[in-house]
Length: 116
Image (cartoon, rainbow, N blue to C red; front, side, top):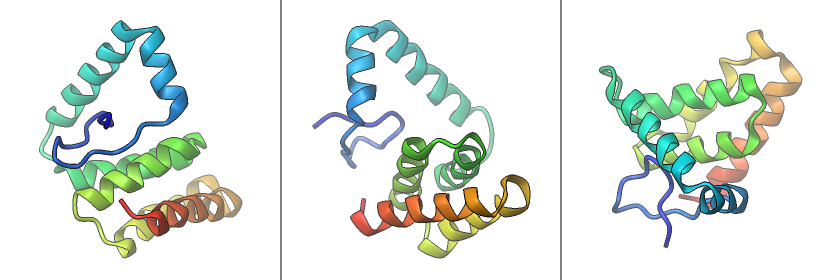
């Protein structure tokens, strides 16, 4: 089964179809993307769970549903609780607004309900 970027090797996940098509067509860009992702995660002291929770907030601000689901899955894989994920989502409310926060909350719960 294909590995999601930054997922640990003992936790296989499926990749979104569009992502798989893109990296198949442009493998050098996929490799560069993966390299940057690894470099930024290693650039500081934050653990993988904290990075995933922060990326949930970034995804909300950017309106990236698929990426938010991916980072919810990663947060769960790295030990985040549903309460922690919900708080990461709720922190967006004053910045991006109620409708975006509620949408993100529903996306997060759709992923949580699916499981890892």
